[in-house]
Length: 114
Image 1 (tube, one colour):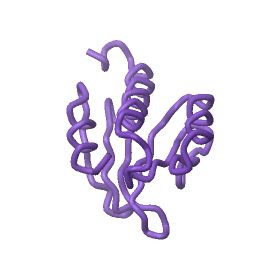
Image 2 (cartoon, rainbow, N blue to C red):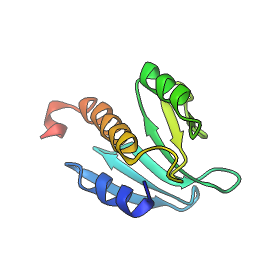
Image 3 (cartoon, rainbow, N blue to C red):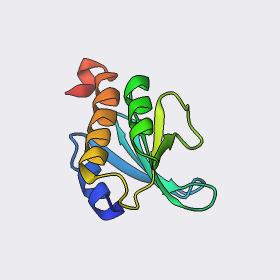
């Protein structure tokens, strides 16, 4: 999934906001002030998308795709880095974004969810 489509997909989520974190040189996508996706670069610098998943789901995907690895500079059990070079099908990336968003959205108070 390229960054333009990722930006459109993340931005279309209900209540999603984005900002650019200059010190990270990365765009963060948030819901209720909590990050559900980040697009930036790793230390090589290579483009990367970072998403939160339940540990079992992240582990499963890492075993299926070489271009999904433990989250760069994040909690390796909960966050996953995806290299958006086309090796991981768009449907998988969209599903990962949806799950990441759902995890963070469900952690918000009922008032914040409305």
